[in-house]
Length: 267
Image 1: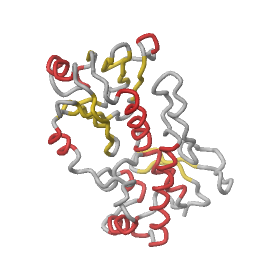
Image 2: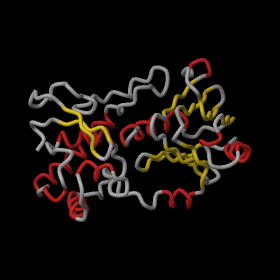
Image 3: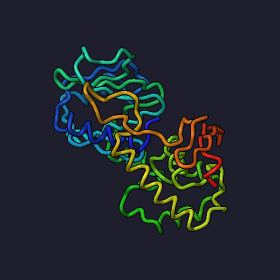
């Protein structure tokens, strides 16, 4: 599932590709991917200019000129492609927004969605989300204060969107590996020094993820050299050597999620 760095990469690239452009046509091939009748959606979105594209947690918000918003959540398996008809991937397209001869194809939206909402409705959707972890106001003190209130395992807490916004299964493993903390460790057993390390690892790993274009396999457009440059340290690396201590990375399950860590240098 795309996480904060993947959605931030999409936000930046799409901002330069379609920011300020007018939607010339809309095609809906899966009605469940949207939240209003197809006719209403098509009528309201066609001829609207994309004013801005913002990210919150794992969501993208396309702001339209009439003030309404398209709220995108890709969920598991969702991705996008921008280009001409002849360049589109050989995959099922659920939604297509056209910008003249170029189109933004939404692919794999079996669980994901593109909802047409008012700014107030978007605000309501975000009401339960935790803080943005890369926001300058999210300081070490704020993080430690937040963690002191929590119980349970650290990996599950990092992934809880109501606690921290944007971290998912892949980057939680990466962050914990970088901070040298076991993913099944209880928050009560984490001392201030480890919490401090964890805070810095969140910042480091997510910023690195953004700089390297996240881990999405599929390019956003033909010739896209940015998307998918991030190389995992530990996630999906069962049986490989830990790059820090050469021990063998193992796989386990925590809260029914596949989890990868180094049993030697994560404590």
